[in-house]
Image (cartoon, rainbow, N blue to C red; front, side, top):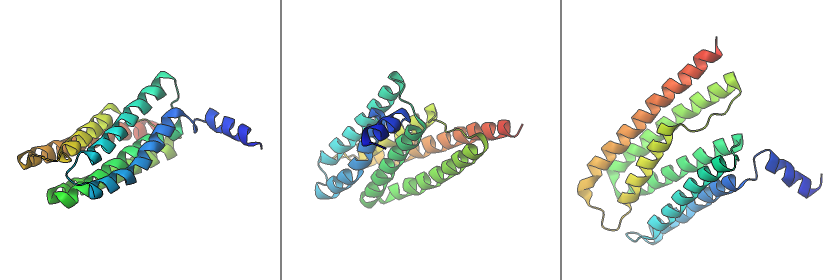
Length: 190
């Protein structure tokens, strides 16, 4: 098969799209962020890399919806980029603020539960589901809170409040996803 036909076929299948390219960019920015976090501690450089990643996330979703470029691959790739970015942020910040390690553990548990639900639902319904509003809200709360912790002069007095906010947001999102997937699974058994 000629290369141009392969690319055309992949584009039709929703693989080669601008939103997916932006998600791939976010994945590529993760090692850049980690490098900047350690090479330029207590500067705005890691925050700038994170901001670029966040901007590409917003553009990715807006372009996908506006131009109807939503694909099953994108539904997988976008949250993967989100979770790996959040994991990298949490891992780096847990080295700076020990208390953040709890959030990293909580994120891992939440995402393993979500992955299990999504896999089971895919097996039963043969459908890939997009992120829900509460998942996007949780991502926003988490990433904004962690971005504040990247500030060169972050006031440590805010740390307990931000950790509590992130913990509550994660539990809220997990609860609503549990209800969502439970209903889908119950409906698939009828």
